[in-house]
Length: 251
Ligand SMILES: O=C[C@H](O)COP(=O)(O)O
Image 1 (cartoon, protein in one colour):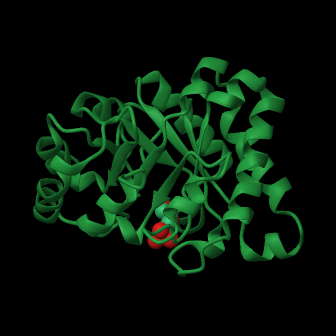
Image 2: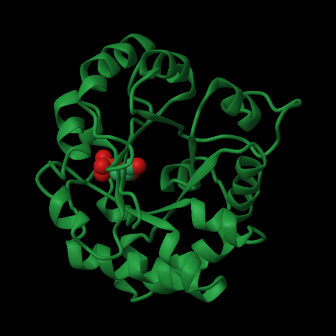
Image 3: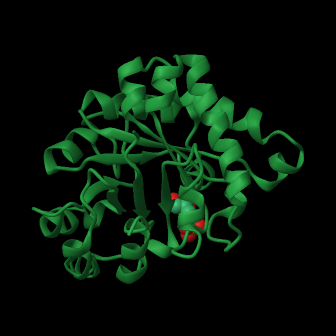
C-alpha cells in the first residue's frame, strides 16, 4: 500500500550540463510513479536543468537542502518558497553530512520540516547513527531521538505524507552496506517511533528509506523487507544505467 520511493542523492557531484545529459538518458525508461517513485536530489545550481529536462516525465525532483525562512538576508541559503515556485517536489533535510560538516541541529531540521510543509513541499528527513553509537548499543535510542525531534509539532496528516531516510553513517559511501536485517531492524524502530508519537495508521503510511551503499546488486533484498519502502542512494545514482536498474528493481 506504500508506494516505493527510490531517490538518488547526487550530493555535490554534477553540473547543469551533466544533469541535462543524465535526464535525457533516463527519462524514457522510468517506472510509472504509481509503481515506484523515481526521484533525483540535485545541488541547487542544477535544479533548473533538472526540472526543465524532466518535464513531462515520471521523474520527481528534490533539493538537497533548504533554509527555514522563505526570504530575507540569509546569504547563501536556498528558499523553500522558491523551490516550490520552481516545481520541486521534495527536500532532503538532516542528512548526516549536513549535520556533521555544517552543524545542522535537530532544532534546525524541525524548523526546516515546518517550512517545507508551509510551502507545500515534502521533506525527506534523514536519521542515522555513527559506528561508535552502534557499537555502544545505542543505535535504536539515537534514531528514535532524532525522529522525535524532527517531527515535533507536525500534524498526523503531514507525517503520513513525508519520507524518513535511515542512513547509518558508517555505511555511507564506504561500500559497507548494513545487512538487510540490520537495516530492517532500525527502519522498524523508525516506524514504531512514529506509531508512538502519532498512531499506527500514521506509522503505516509513512515511507521509510534505507540509505548507505545501496546499489543494483542489493536493492531487491533491501526492498523486500517489511519496513523498507525505498532507498536514498548516493554513489550508485550518478550513472544513468545504475540509476535505472535501481528504480526499475521491480522489473
Ligand atoms: O544520501 C545518500 C547516502 O548518503 C548514501 O550514499 P552512498 O549510496 O554513496 O553510500
